[in-house]
Length: 441
Image (cartoon, rainbow, N blue to C red; front, side):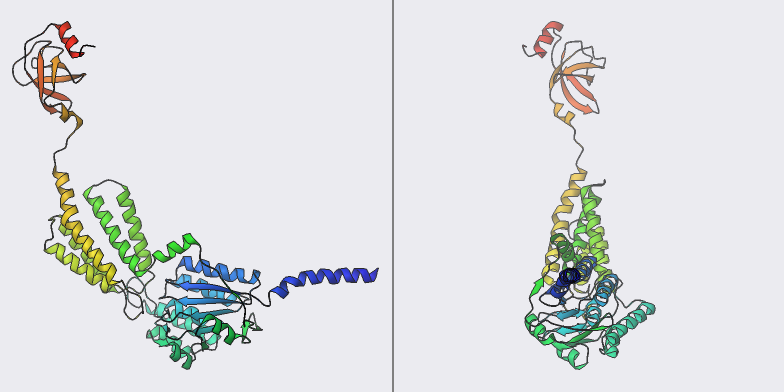
């Protein structure tokens, strides 16, 4: 009997141990950190890292290509990486990719840091919508943070500090020579083969990576979240800024809370949110604001005047200088700037003048259609009275002589709800007049 119980306990323990055995081996969770580091990206990365342990993954592989982003989102991702019981490998790829600004912090926090040939890392100075390095307190905090990450992973803390203080950047080969990364890999498969057997520290214990020949299960961001994430790019930030401007101008031309005003405010909000996550230059912002001012002046004198030309020049220059050129790949494309400038020119040459002309047109109402219509008086006009016109009873006023009841009149003008009429015939018998009015009914 005792032997049976022992067998039962052994079988139960075997069942419990089965998931643990599955966690040792055959899955690497693949994630992508692409574009601006924002709350959408942070939620996706942190959620998938948390799920990796439940899925029994042997490692998490994050492929990085980012110009940087929000400090708060960056710290959420780093905290998730540092506290993950599953080893996290970061890979800057493909060729031409970069781990700039917040991306450099994230790369240095990973258990294994890898770069593909032709990539770069660095330029990690804290930036904001002001376009300049923020207060010394913020700078010193960023320096202390990146040094702690580098020291924790036994990487070069002095270079990490230069990446923040001096916006230093390094190619993959330079980063490897400087001790900033652990190795260079030409592909994800090459990476998994080369990190296999490497030991990393997790929760105070050494964990050996088992990644050779392991399948990578790529997990993408949800469709809705992905759309919102990809709207926060330099090109979209610029486009939303001027879309918002155009809609606000439309609201200015036709006052009153409308769909144009609401969409304009939302577009500007999205634009400012994106600008707040990117390395914006102050001169670019000033030029774009100046362009707005010139265009508002142009509204008072539509038709491409000096103000309109100055606005277009400021728009093109502002778009070109909006982002710091020291951050690779972070710029507004000329193929976005020039069409926007052309659209704004056409808008002020054709749309605005037409809208202003429409505002100056005399107000017309449905009663204007009554001018020239004939009817019959239903009371004497001395000179005021009533008349049956267009099957309705109206208050009328004779503009010439007094008239009798039943006399034929014609509408010559409309003043509010009163018609101005003139007599055009002799008096008729009332019954005959009503028969005539009824159209033989």
